[in-house]
Image (cartoon, rainbow over all chains, first blue to last red; front, side, top):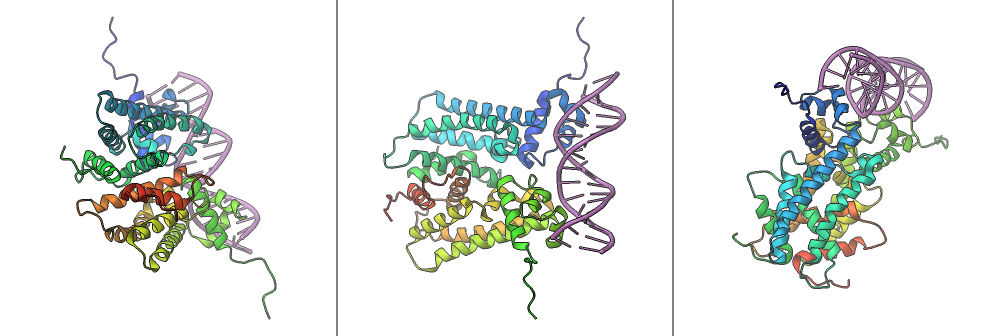
Amino acid sequence: MPTPAKRSNNRTQELLDSAAEHFSKHGYRASTMRKIAVSCGMLPGSIYYHYPSKEALLLAVYEEGVRQLVAGIQEQMENPKPPLQRLKDVMAQHIAMITAPSAYASVLIRVMPDAAPEISDQLIELRDQYETLLKNLVDDLPVSQSVNKSLMRLVLIGAANHVHYWYQPGTMSTDEIASQIVGMIFGTENDPT
Amino acid sequence: MPTPAKRSNNRTQELLDSAAEHFSKHGYRASTMRKIAVSCGMLPGSIYYHYPSKEALLLAVYEEGVRQLVAGIQEQMENPKPPLQRLKDVMAQHIAMITAPSAYASVLIRVMPDAAPEISDQLIELRDQYETLLKNLVDDLPVSQSVNKSLMRLVLIGAANHVHYWYQPGTMSTDEIASQIVGMIFGTENDPT
DNA sequence: CCTACCGATCGGTAGG
DNA sequence: CCTACCGATCGGTAGG
């Protein structure tokens, strides 16, 4: 006999979404297990049915954040295009993901690994996974060998991540922002794409 | 009669230094009054002799941070020099201050105003004081009018602030970093200043 | 600036 | 996933 229509018995996904939203908006310490639980309709103790600790919850959010970022960037890498266009598209994708309202990706920006010292190594490793992708992208850029590509990567990431703090929907689109940042650094005129 | 040699009876400054260091390194919530007190040789309750609340303590640190940033930048503005050289010097000053080990300035980067909702308005106003200075600086830059100067300012701040997270003493100097960032955006060749 | 303390809140758990 | 709870820690205070 089929299981009768009952309420979804596994709300791990809703819980993870709530956690991501709280961590992203308020940071790690200010996001209490109670607030996270209540915002997805659970009681405080119920979280521990899904995750054994607050740290495990953060780790799960981080993992999903990196997974989404990596997937988004690899999607932009798939079809061949000029390196500068590729950079523009990747930047646009990155900025879109870290400015999205309930983005898992923005947790990587808001919550630094030392917020949870006991898992900071794993958090750092997850960040590095993504940064390695960006490193390869910048290394493939055809620029004068006099420029410091490591620094260039850090400038691009810094400028892009900072958008998270000042972006307001309705003014400039994330695509426009990415296009202008890249244009600013590589002297490309604004293209009316 | 002169007051006899007794232990400094006003350790507000040491307390403020300890608070700045904790806020900068661990954020607002993770910096407990107890830890701040102990790290400057006080007992937890003694902080309240100097400041009435944790929020007041953060506000004082913020104020000093902005004061130092503004003073540092105005110092770079004093003697006349070409706009681009001025930008380079200001960026170098900014980066030096936010990477200094126990910098008040770095608290402005690490602790966002919403960490203390009840004083977030005052915190934001303090940040704005500094950003206004930078706005004027960028507005004076002689660049093609096709570039978005607001975005240019945000890119510069984003790139500069991000240094706080990856800087390691002993590799590149803060001056070199500033010089290369500005060179990267304005196409100036590295000058051997 | 210390002593001694308080109410509130936190992450987490036993048992169902 | 809920009920009922615990020890630890937090920001803050009275009185000196």
